[in-house]
Length: 475
Image 1 (cartoon, rainbow, N blue to C red):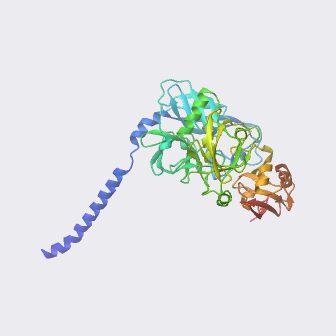
Image 2: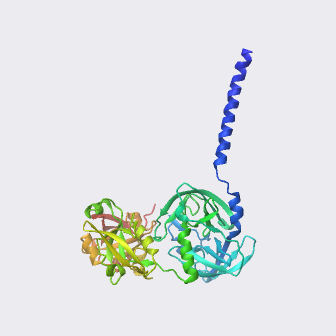
Image 3: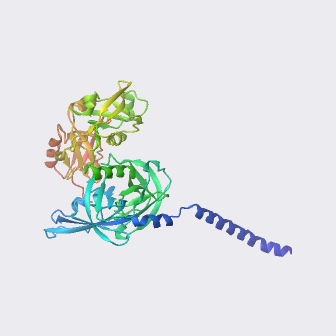
């Protein structure tokens, strides 16, 4: 009996351990979400969108290739043309996704999905294909509203994106690479993300697998409610790499309502150029932390000017909402209807004061940061940056006599390779003072591409030189 016990004991322990592992796995499986019911209910409201556009072959695909890989809109796969291909017009097709928000045929998608489209076709879940009319689009939020001639369509339930929490489960339905109604799932990785040139959208970051063709499709919470529109991915390869970004549905529905009722989108405008509050700036302005938006310039005849805002003011709240950083202010002001009042709290000279501003309508010729747009000062060809002239107030604040402000930097451009960043002020190029954006562009055009060029910049009050090479060195 003792020998039998010694022989049987190890097997008993092994069986017990295996049972414990299986029980734990079963319990873990029960804790994972089941998306089957969500998909059954939601799939009929998700659509496939195909577009056709006519482009000049002389344009080629290079404009699209110049989009930085770090934040690339996934408009669809395009076969690159090779130099020397014949000219003439060509027909280009692309695929995306969308979803029905009203039974009478209104559909939401991304603006970049239908950009420049000559023809838009919507394929429903029941395989019907219907031509769609573009009601309107808003490139600043990347939202577009379509209309098809149909009634009693299946609509999706709209949720509250403001209730999303980091770590909760979400799912996407779309047409990656043209595979209709593909389902992927993951979790919310972060909220209120700010991406380059997307000041007005507090993006939802997820690890849901998103690929070309998913663009414009819905992002769901576990209750089957739409909480976002899948819009962008972070990629170095052109495909999914674990980071996806969705437009909060609260933002998208506000835009859609305005497009449907007004035909355009109105946004609140203060008329200030703002910048982040660095640690050194916070200390210099007598602030306790780096929260707030520092006013670097106030436009003439603007709502801010009329209300008495000044360069050097630090806006710390708007209508009771704390300005955590400078990107928060445009989002809050953008939600205010033109003509309405907003109460600002600002720090000026170490004192807190309240200022009431009657918000204006955003002028079309302004950039997202409130500065005038300067197409002539956007030298993406060689430097890969967008720049603008400094105002007198900015020169006085920075304590410099000349220079140009760097607004945007292409991550793949020559300026980025040299270490130039947004917010830098270029004060000299090739040991010659830079007085204007046009002057710098002319200097770049006439510069020798085969050597490193010294460029002096001001950054956070410090002066430093970087070596800029306009032409990549041969390996």
